[in-house]
Length: 505
Image 1 (cartoon, helix red, strand yellow):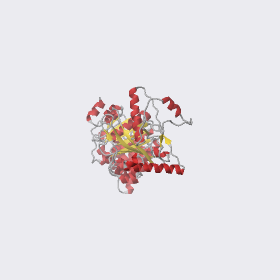
Image 2 (cartoon, one colour; image 1 turned 90 degrees about the horizontal axis):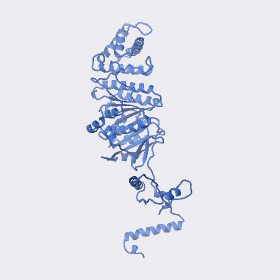
Image 3 (tube, one colour; image 1 turned 90 degrees about the vertical axis):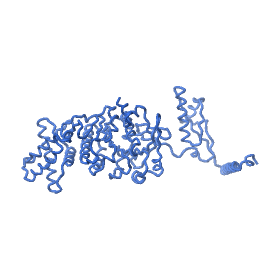
Image 4 (cartoon, one colour; image 1 turned 30 degrees about the horizontal axis):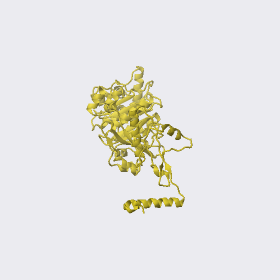
């Protein structure tokens, strides 16, 4: 009897188990395996060599729990030759397995490498690289959603990803926000900040046409009808409503035709004047008395938004801002939360500008439209229609529509949104498990991860996010990634007063 068997009973029991296993292997004719992982790296100096060595050791420790890396600086050339592909050799540094399957030495899963044509490199939990992309991910659409509670760094994460997309794709970006979080970011990029509310100096003419156009196309006509419908209240009588619609379309056509003769772009006051004085259709057929009254009623409904009124200074003027900049920020902070009609008008006009930009650039140019604080901005049925229309039409223009919200429950407010959105950036959230399970079809283990995402503050810090992509077959793939930035990035992206002042300087 060995000393182990005579001494420690637990050690003796383990030894008997090992002997039994070895006896079984010999009697059954089974075999054990030797396997190993070798990493060869070079560095430009001692400091870089030490840094790389520690990073590799940490990665191996996470990937192969329980194993210790053997580190040395000799025999590197021999190892390179020995491990070259297709040379029928094996590495000299292998470890004997006490199991009959070599797979027991390795983890059953590995980090998700990311999109095959990804352009955004980020580190994952294993400190390996995962490549992300909005435009080359093999998905049905480019739309994305950012889900995280307030104060968790949603805007920071979006700006970080946008910066990397700009470096690779140089997309056209439109941002809609109510909190000024993106103001410094857009200024640093040389973009256009457009405060869109009464009292600002901005003038935005909803009747502008794209370059080279002399009359509105079908999409522009539909926008103007929807916009006038936000200004006035259409008749509840179906017969009168049909007449109002026909009169409005004809008035828009007459207004553009009349101003084209003078080589001028019409404004809303010109449309109101046409409605006020209309007595016949464009083909010279005379109006009846009821139709004349309907036209005058439409003109009267526009008056509170024309001329010297607060909104007249904004929407009843010729455009005085550059809406063709590559990065545009629409600041809606001056519109009261309770003023749903003016918020709807603003979203309609911004949507029209987005489509104009999309039409004026070839499909090969990537475009992004992003709505921050989606939950507070998209509240009415008209707001939801804005999102649905944008999601539906965007794909044909190579436009990625993005939204950020504090609650995953906001996704339930728009029918079919989970089918339209392909990419999700999810922060640490509590609750909403049924939405992740039923709508995003995430497995339980992934849902459990969401409430445990970490954050490291200070220099060299990072924040963990879950990136999920729904590929063409509908199955979700993804990885826990780290959003980390340089000191300059922190200064530009942070909403804190101290850092935003630094960014402006």
